[in-house]
Length: 473
Image (cartoon, rainbow, N blue to C red; front, side, top):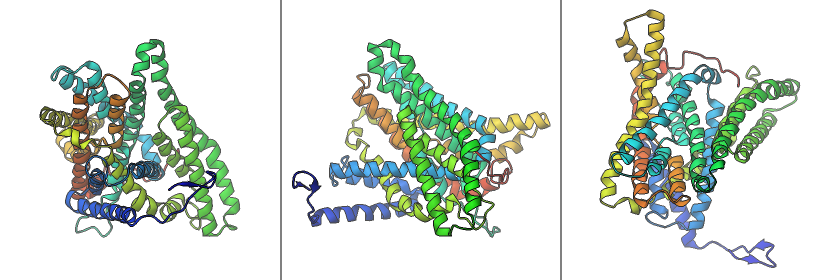
């Protein structure tokens, strides 16, 4: 559209039929691809990524670049809402109880891919140490949005004797450990992104390295400490007093509007604060969800809760518009035509397998944790019974950490475009690993939840029955 008048308004023209049909077909194919992918792979997002590849610049170039940029921005809003919902619905009591295990799992998931990258790329393939570091950094990330979508949308197969559907994996102890470990991975990934973005400047000004690394660590640490304290001792008491005073004067519709305003205010504040402080916006979104969850006064059954408001006013738009655009935007960012270059194919596949193992090994944390806990209580013996109970939760944790998605692509493209250290060949090898892991991970998780989800939910150590308290931030 052209700018009309003196440049103070946009001229309105009826869109051309080709543009209308292109957009309609894009959204219809997105919906159909999600349905087919969910039936075939147990992971609907795979189909949406493929549609992004076909309609975007990588293959078909059907959508205009301006539309792709718009959909990328809208999709990122969808990602923020996905992570906010994860924080809103996570069991905060379990999160606190299992924080140490989550940190250990996150560290294993970060260090193992970096170490394996140096072993294969630096020692095996002859790439430079900086190339191995950049690729290892991009593959140490975990796609938090992908993880949350798979955990919340894949329904476990209930046993024939069950009258109630099994709880979603996100509400189990192992699901809580997984989500919090993925959040920690995201925070650490941001730190490493900052290092990579500033490698050129650090080479010219070595004294800036400390602040380059320290700023996102300091910002994330302060947010993680200060936000729960403010929520627990200031925001939650004030909000509960407000609800008690207004419980009889507010209709359900008015209560929904108050809840909606609180969610928008808290989410906007923490996302903006995280961005300007140098932390991850996604980390701010997760904290916002936890803060809002701590405000709820569930003792008042007549007042709709925040989850009710989110499902009524936000969930449909997120689920059917913004979330598909997010996964399609991942497809927009995959350099598909560069992947088919002889040597880089087999090297990329080998590297992808190694990076898959680098995340699957995170599941061993569950096995070791259980063995240590049982031996401390019972002494020697009974290791086989512990392993029988723990292998399915361990497999879920390891496989759900595999998908790299948007964060991996972001890091590796920063390494290629904003530093002189990453060659085209190394970039393509890394993209192979990111793409294959992003496809294989959700498929494995979907199949595992479908077959073993009910058993995991009923697991006495890692299921939903361990702790029913909601907890507070």
